[in-house]
Length: 213
Image 1 (spheres, one colour):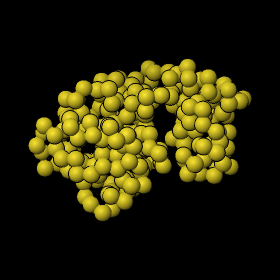
Image 2 (cartoon, rainbow, N blue to C red):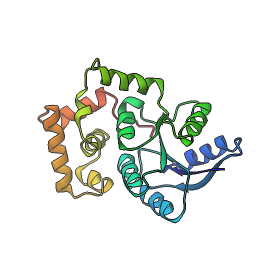
Image 3 (tube, one colour):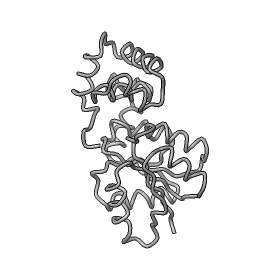
Image 4 (cartoon, rainbow, N blue to C red):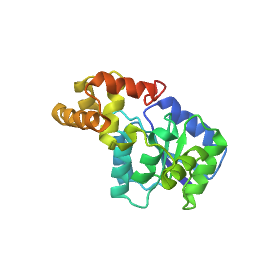
């Protein structure tokens, strides 16, 4: 039996995943968490074989949660499951320790295949993400400006573009407004922008925000 912890703040998504996997008797949703903090507490109390982790969580960003999971349990197998396309967070998730990245719009059999592959100790990489990794490896892709940002800087950019205020962002990221301002300043400097409006326009133009998630 493969015991799975689903970490997603949408109850309907968690219910849907449970229904999707129930036709496979060896795949068991053994736990559900609606936030990063809840997931961390559950991981410390019980062992799971696999985590299905969303990027957007109400208390912490999924990449930060992923890093904490891996620091506490290095052998933990994690698949990131998100509405964001692979070119937004796929490489970042793999670098942070995920063994797979799947868009929520993928077919059910893709998810089941990915779970079995990861459980066997292999990584799941979609064709889209594989092409991106290959292009980066051989130097044929033109790096977009946002790809040079750290996870915190990238998260700040996306939250700004989503219409969040400085105080909102500081609460979501669990940081002081002063620290968020530092990340905002670094982000603007790296991307060559002089104000928030230019950064927000870039994020919207490059589809870095997703209203469905």
